[in-house]
Amino acid sequence: MQIVTIEGVPYDWLKRLQEIHAHVFDGANLPLEKLESKEGLVCLLAVENEDIIGFKIGYTHPDGIFYSWLGGVREKKRGQGIASQLMRRQHEHLKPPADVTESERSSLCKHKADSGRNYASA
Image (cartoon, rainbow, N blue to C red; front, side, top):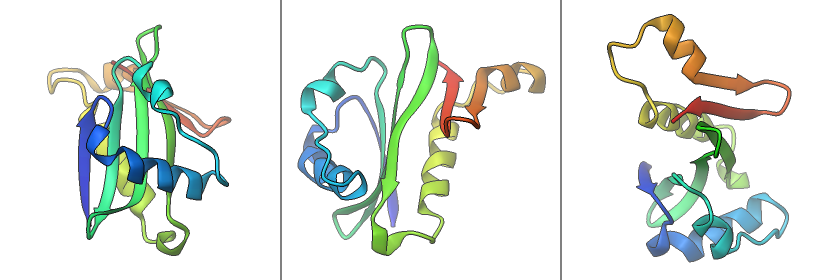
């Protein structure tokens, strides 16, 4: 498995992303227009043999906080740590500069436990 990181809309992967989104979210549609409307969109795709087996999508909210918006893993691939790998890679992609103190880093990266959504300042 490899993780592909794409800044912006993943046009080359769009059909496969929409298919796994429908699989994870009980047939729900992921419209292209919705993806195109998100500023600072970052898509992480777990890929195996050219198939997307997991994904994590986030974007920069207008208030400057990065919102980890959607994600999921194919049912037959769950329980293998794929979602955790995608989350870690998303955090690494958003990592602040090395000279940021631990206190500043904590204020930049937030996880709202009550909603299950991740936030980080962009």
